[in-house]
Image (tube, rainbow, N blue to C red; front, side, top):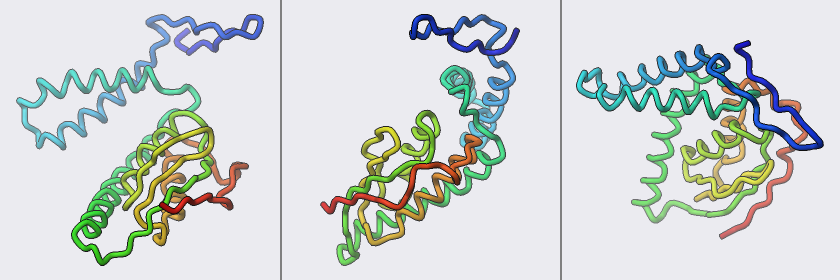
Length: 194
């Protein structure tokens, strides 16, 4: 009682799991709501009048986070907290780099599309990685199929692959996944010059 039930298989077909009010992971909901409330408080500068909008959004986001999370891919708090400063620094660095390139036509551009082989398992961790790739300087994820992420880069001469590997390791830690011994290799990267 209080645990998620596994889907039953009958003649090769999966049935939807039975759920009731007791199977809802209440602690996970409270933890997510508390973290989101802290983020909201920081973003709003502690303005009391902002809670009329923030409180319902926090409840909805916490509920969606619990409801949509994959049972095998739970978030780990400490790696998630250490990811926040990394995310902020890379976002600022990426913005500055793209702005410099926009205002200085003399800077080199070697646009390309990379097929990056992922070591993360299919699911929430891959989606989180694909959505986060756009914070790196001059990168934009354009497609995700199986264990391959298609990425558009502004300058293929920058160390994009090593930055992607670093990002993938950080996201693996957030989801509690060991990708160091994964069979998906980074040796082959198909590039298409634009």
